[in-house]
Length: 369
Ligand SMILES: Nc1nc2c(ncn2[C@@H]2O[C@H](COP(=O)(O)OP(=O)(O)OP(=O)(O)O)[C@@H](O)[C@H]2O)c(=O)[nH]1
Image (cartoon, rainbow, N blue to C red):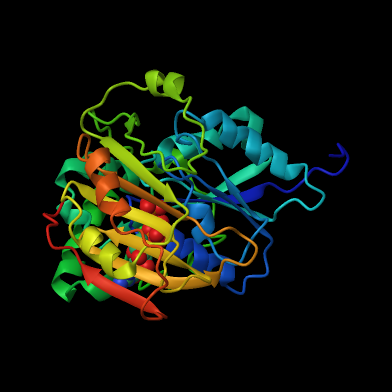
């Protein structure tokens, strides 16, 4: 970097919001929009496998995964280092978008960009909190965290308005306004919002945000990694020290459990296993290797009662492998019985019927937030 030609600070947008709210959906919209900007993306996933980087489509090479911890606490230093490294690239980005994990504290992420190391190189443009119109009012257990995430926003994208009535939507909007009275609320279906209201919206001001002190959730959360180790599970399990750095806060605890296998699933059996997942699991996502569509990845999404499996891109040169992550209440993921349930869905037989497009099902035993 030359001292004679000071760089213009790179605008930064932080995407935040609870698990499954629609952050990655919005991010994909932004990345495929016609804004002409060279955008770099930092994705921070929660769980031992970084599924989100695989779900950010069509922008390979520009998406950097910040895994093995949460960018608001355990790997905050990684966020700082990675942001600075971006500037040293031959072609530095013109815009930076950070997708925080659904359990992150956006205040801590925003404050990172206010540190002396980053302040002159980056300019925090906006904190966008994605709010799930269908589920946000049902998450009593995680309400503190969600309010905290909303309080940091200058823009709220109210997602999934196609799944609620006008009355429910108005109720959620009113609730959001009680938390951040002057916030701009953009209702959205699958992240379809005007880009001019999302990117380059101005200068975010940490000072004027109505910081809500949530006594039981001071941006700490426990990660209970109740790992299942499939035969091809090669992620780093030596994160014990990081876990011990965490303060125990029982109002915002999560467990994650993952499953990795290189044999294909029978979709018919998998459907039953997914529909019967325990009610303590709220979120699931993954890339599936299915006997019915062995040449193509299938994408699994579970949010609350809703399950979708979408046939996606061909595996190409990649070795087909299923990778799924589930997130739920602490103690709510029984690894042994989940392993047994999913192992029973594996098959060596070719799929009986070909599938294409998207399949949607409802869970049988989901009890709500
Ligand atoms: N019907 C409907 N579904 C949506 C909408 N926005 C997102 N979804 C679905 O909600 C599910 C979760 O969306 P994601 O974008 O992955 O949510 P996320 O916030 O990135 O999830 P985490 O990274 O786990 O926190 C996916 O199945 C999406 O297709 C919407 O406006 N309407």
